[in-house]
Length: 310
Ligand code: UT7
Image (cartoon, rainbow, N blue to C red; front, side):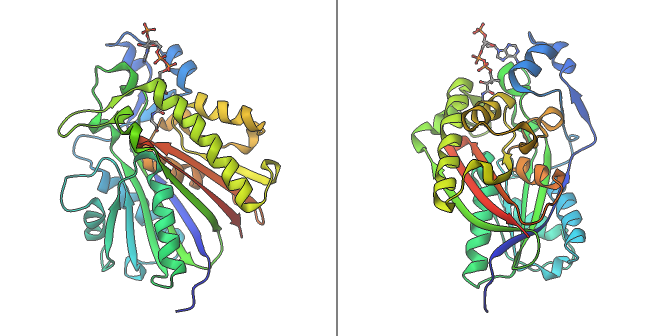
């Protein structure tokens, strides 16, 4: 098989209908709408109903993106699912999603890299395609964050939302050609953000905040150097949506104009591995531009990608 550059030909998003506004937390925690908005940029998030699992949201986004890509489940060669909130320990959420896509026989596996999961998944898709092994890959980021949060921990309960995003990546095609991806991990910070077996999320917020900025800056510098670009050459910087102040800190460092930084955090909060594909869906396609994406999360993982829009 002659391989062409791996290209994201379509992306789609799914957000559950139930909106949870900041005022919800004022009713039982020592917090306020103004504190949350000023410190994070978040006004509301979506939380899925009790019976809805990460795989269900993933299937909604997957079905939508297949429609956009003019494909059917049987056309897929591989399914990758980035999630830190799997439906259950076994089998993978990817296997459950495959079973809900009628006629799909593709092998499928989960990728566990927290909020960097979508870009980690994209690197796997790129490698499979450019090695000539597969042609059509579905990458889903789906998270039911509300199931792993302690409702009484005001530093985490306010930050996260549920949702899913999905992309189809093919050998060649029109869309976002994946030019370069870099991945990183600081395993010594594994305890800065974690979920113990059977427990809820624990986070050292300031450490995560500081590391996200440091690594975000580093990733951008490395990508620009590798691709011999200046930040001015980038049309859009697609940040993982964790905290508006993290994004603004990095933005100031590089003096990136605000209009080049699309965001959804105000109404999605942090949807972890789903945040980048949800954002990708919201961006209008402009031809012959360079786009960049940056992510960071538990692990401590970080990643960056450079694309050309075709
Ligand atoms: O994808 C990666 C996922 N995680 C993240 O991106 C999280 C990164 N970290 C953050 O976003 C921020 O650290 C937080 C939003 C979690 C906290 O904001 P901060 O400005 O770093 O606050 P802080 O941790 O320095 O805490 C300042 C104060 C503390 O009170 P005391 O000890 O000074 O009395 C906190 O207890 O703010 C308090 N606080 C809150 N107050 C009102 C923490 N959460 C809240 C809250 N409402 N929801």
